[in-house]
Every structure is written in structure tokens, then in C-alpha cells.
Length: 117
Image 1 (tube, rainbow, N blue to C red):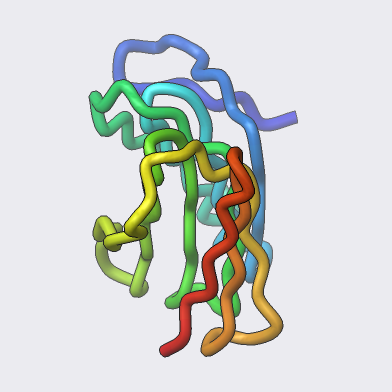
Image 2: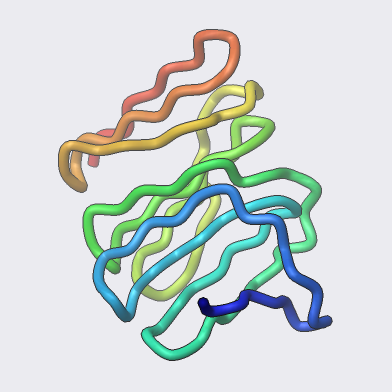
């Protein structure tokens, strides 16, 4: 077992995990928490935001999406996580893609988004 703790030593509440390989595993959760396992240790970034992140999916270590409350969609390009415009305010609960060019996001209130690159 590999414990996850933030900078203050607190254990965050996590909701989803996805990995490209053994050295690129991501987890997301409450309070905008994003954690990455690099094959040896977990490194946690708590964004300090009040939104929750509910799910994540990627096509590669350089193409990862995370979704959450208030229509939050984040994308990781291998270097940084950037917020994407979703156009909705509903909580987004799940994300999945057939490949990196066709990504589907679903959420409350019948929210269904397709992101095409």
C-alpha cells in the first residue's frame, strides 16, 4: 500500500484513479486534489479550490482529463493541468474516450459533452 498525503500531511479523499503506465498514475478527489504516482511516491497538488474532481481518463501520459463539480474540466498535457471551458454548470461525474481525439463527459441533469481535438 502506498499512502497519499498532501503537503500538510493530511490524507485527501480520492474518488478516481487512472494510469498510463506504472510511472504515470493519477488520482483525483475532493477540494480539487490531484495526485500523481511516479512509480515510487505519490505527489499531491491541492488546488485549494472548493470543487470536487470526480473522475479522470487519459489516452496517454501527456493527454489526461479530469472532471468535477460546477462543470469543471481540466486537461493535463504532460506539463501542466489547465482548465477547459465545458459550457455547463452541472456536476460532471465521468469521462471516457475512444482515443485522444474523441472524449465523452457525462454528468448531472443529462449533461453529455463530446470533446474533439
